Length: 585
Image (cartoon, rainbow, N blue to C red; front, top):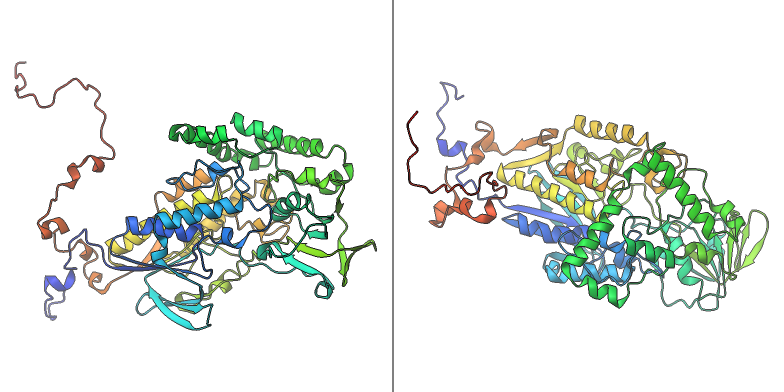
């Protein structure tokens, strides 16, 4: 209300003089152009008007993980039909578990089809981002990786699509730097190194090592497989699809030409994809400790490994965990157990004591000469790497996440306005495809950006109470699952008993249902100055763009607008009848 001694303000100064369906300009920056950046480049321009979008990518090409990882045997660890976008199916995957090269080609095809390249600035590494509270914008500092020069950009919304599995380190083993042979990390593969007829040491057997071993075994002279930990090798082809079961039984996961020809029929492939994705999505009960499904899956996994290693009880005893399947990330590993049993493979469960110029010594004192060391020793999953992000009050995101990484709904950290993370803390589905969850995260971010535009909001940031409530729910949820059993897992940032920070508290389809309808009340907002006296000033001048431009304003009559068109209960009744109803009693 205006005080009596104040000069009255005109109505134009208290509302936005714009049409209600004309969104304000919005600048968005996305960091990274793996599948998250590609999704951003496809979805945002389609659904957000008056948008300026820039995608910064440190590599010279799109693809992210699938561009960087090209080690022998690299492939998806869920069936191919489940590892693709809902709106872009590839019916011609050559294998049931797609190779990394094919997935990277899928990424390239997406980028070309939707012309993502027009939005990208390649070989640009984002070094820092700072929230400017006075103007409510992000200041982003970017380094040109070719010449080291820096540039500064600004945006209203910052989206982080860097992923988690992208910073690798050499293992900390005494004497590692003394080795005079060739050393390779699977995350930085050097294809020029000749491995044929070489004596090779493979260190590590997470999902990467499990894929590398069967690819190298037929090539090398001898392969020493150093695996001090334990792991479950997941049964494959156990769902409801007959083709998947048949391929698992045969051990041959390549699709025949007959199968590929059948998949060219869109309806046939859609049915196949429904079956496979349903199998992938229907497994959450196996993660709850003590359920009948969990017990059955434990028995099935145990029998699978026993059958594969029937002739090698030494490997079975060294590899078989005493915790339940799923505590660590499950990997199907086609061919891994079979390769472990081959004559030119030595499975070594003793810890490494030291590495010398030409050999590796285990704690038992045995030394084994090798020509090449391959490290499949994983990534930094601490959430303490990446650009320096500074939010409200100068708060550093890495400090906020030390010791506990948290983000509301997996994507919105505390004190970080207009900020959305793909695959943030608790951003991977309990069951299902991560690529689909990223798609639903993108849709959530789009709805948020549209709200910022529509209501002329300068910034939105999650309330501390909402952020805490989500973390509390996550901890209570996982307390009853196999993930909290005493196994060392990157789900827990490489610890044995730490907090679960990788998984969403539910299945993939659960995350979709949760993210479809954002709880706007869980955010705090800073409005533009015009809204101080009139919070609904965004309603504008009472007009629409169609009225201003003298174009059609009856789009609500179009068939595509009637999303929930009612189905008549009595379809034979003609509503256009001109006969008046009888007024007789």
